[in-house]
Structures are given as structure tokens and as C-alpha cells.
Image (tube, rainbow over all chains, first blue to last red; front, side, top):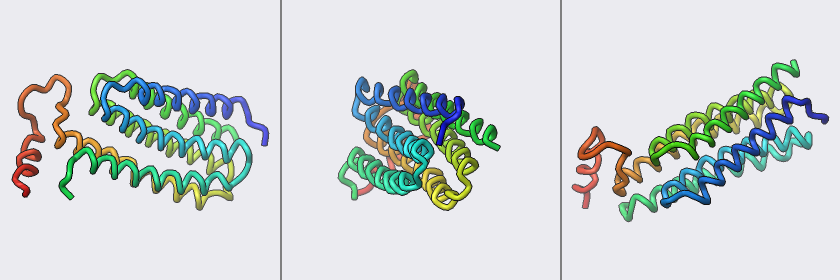
Length: 88
Length: 111
């Protein structure tokens, strides 16, 4: 499917968002900054996968986005429990 | 109809981009969590609505993804901020005790 100009601008903006989030992931002075950056990056990656589904006109990428967002949530909660300490 | 879908897609991408910009520009961990979660959730929902208008036959999977983001993203951010507070990260420019200090005391009483 040919994308219109507005859709191309939307995909470019998503790329810029992922790059800004990667900047905080690389520069982040402490570990919590990197963790919340990874959390935001998981949401942005889910949205970008939906954008891929639009770009390649294939519904297969929606399944990938669904599984990725589920696994990212489990990873974020595990990281949070690790920071909090050994109480359960 | 295509124009409405494009406007929703563009709105979602702009809000995701603003959330990532706030992640870079904000001075503190808690403000970063706040701006990233709110803006990215709104942007993701708007992008999914735009994709659903563009491809109406994908609506089931898009609704499931939207519900998942709407349920898990605020819960994950709240869990992270609570864990950071208990682990001893202080908010920016708030010396001494604040409204959440009883949370620390109740945690320390636990065996």
C-alpha cells in the first residue's frame, strides 16, 4: 500500500521518538533512568510494529506487537521488584 | 476517511515524540516517568485508532493491543516509581519528608 505524505511524516516522527528514547538509554546517569527509558521504548516499539503492519500491509506484525508488549510488561515488573529489594 | 486516519496517526506520532523528548529534557527520574507514561500512552492509543480507521478488518487485534497498553503501561510505571521510592531515590528539590514518607515506615516494619 502506498503511504500518503502524512503517514510518512508519522513514521518519521516515530523514528525520532525511538532515537530520543535511545539517547536517554545510552546517556542516562543512573540505572533508574535506563529502566524507565526501556519501559518507554517498549511502548514505542509496539506502536512502531503497528506502523510496520501498515507499511507492509500485513496483519502478521500485529501478533508480534501483542506478544512484545506482554513480555515487556513482565520484564518491567521483574526489574521493579529487583530494585525494590528482596521482600518477596 | 483516509484523511481522518492520517490525522489520528500523525497525532499519535507527535505525542509519542513529545513523550520521548520529555524523557530527554526532564530533570528528575519521577518527572521523566510521568511525562513518558502519559504522553506515550495517549500517543499509542491515537496511533492504534488511526490504524483501525485505515484497516477496519484489523480491529480485533488492535483493540486487544490498545487494552493491553492501557492496562499495563500505567501499572508498570507506578510499580517502578514505588520501587524507586522504597529503594531511596528522592524527588527533585524536595528535602526532608513528603507525602509518601509513611510508605517507607510501613515497609521498614515488615520482617
